[in-house]
Image (cartoon, rainbow, N blue to C red; front, side, top):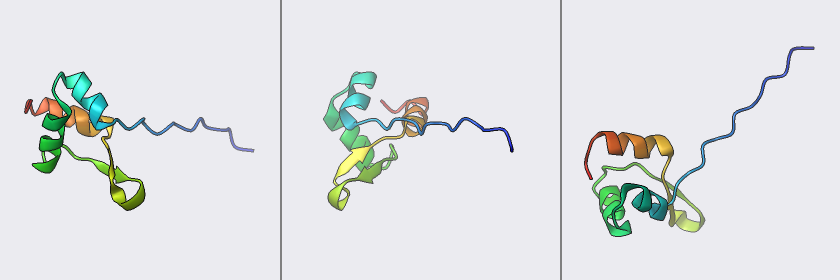
Length: 67
């Protein structure tokens, strides 16, 4: 029997509010970055209305220094 491997948990997706708090900006600023295509998002829920941000996308946005 092959050895079992530990499965990695998928990263926890962030909300617009969480990103705003981490970056010390308003939620509206985060939404503007999303609308401008500067911050990649994942849309979930009915009709894709809920916005979630992958931690890697948030890191890439911050590295570009567009705050």
